[in-house]
Length: 81
Image 1: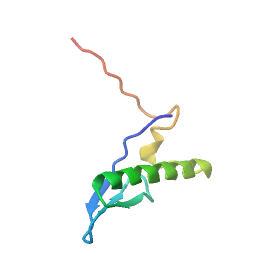
Image 2: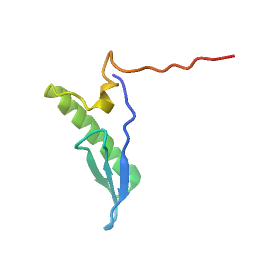
Image 3: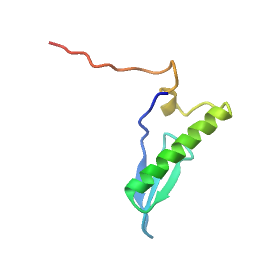
Image 4: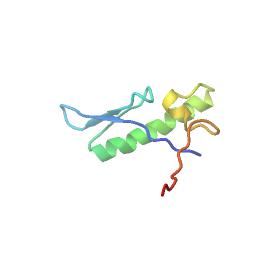
């Protein structure tokens, strides 16, 4: 299983707590008391959304397609003297 770094936007809510969303993964919305808690919830929501996409045979959003097996670009470190 590959992993992808997903861009998440965090915003402080006027009533307290934080809200996480992601333009790269539509439908990702998570709310928590702290930034750490919000990010943890957002990660769980992201996993659930990806599992739903796959279960229903839907195409993954473009930002996640690179993490699909056999697809995307791979970068490896190369020493240059």
